[in-house]
Length: 188
Image (cartoon, rainbow, N blue to C red; front, side, top):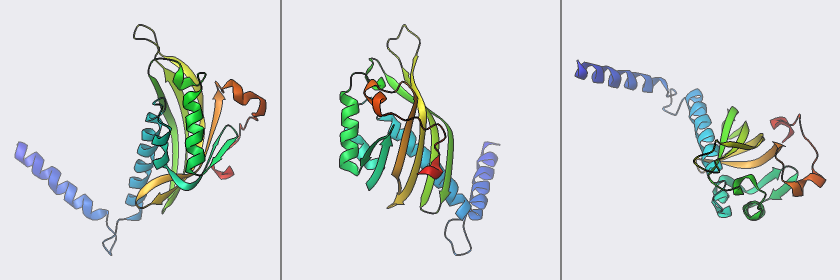
C-alpha cells in the first residue's frame, strides 16, 4: 500500500511538473509569477527578522544600489544612506525594537503583483515586544509598507520602499511628520 501511494505521488508530481513548462521548455509564466510571489514574501519576512538585531549592514542585501527608502517621510537614497538610517534606528533608545526582550514583526495582508522582473507589494506590519517570559506580549507599533521590487541576478530586491507608521511614531519624527493615510503602491 505504501509503495502504491509513493508511486502515485511521484507520478502526479511528474505529470504536474510537465504542466508548468511552456512549449519551448521555459517556465510557464503563471507558475513563474507564483514562484516569484512566494520568493518576494519570503524575502520580506527574512528582511523583517533582522529588526532588533542591531546590525544595520544586514539590510544592504535587500536593496538595489540606487534604492529609495522612505520611512515616515525620512528619505534615504542608495545603500550607504539606507545603512545609516538603520544605524540611527538601532541606536535610538525609543525605537520599538529597543524596548527590552525579544522583538518580532508580524506581517499581514500581503498584496503582491508580479510582472516579469518587476513587482509591487504592500503589507501591514505590527511590532510585538516580549519584555519578559511571565508577561503577555505587547503591541508596540503598527503601520503599512509599499514596495517596488526588481529581480537582480535571480534575486528580488527593493528598488523603492515606503514605510508608514500608523501608531507609535518615534518622538523625534513628530515635528516633520505628515500623515499619508491614502498612500498606495501607485504613489511610488
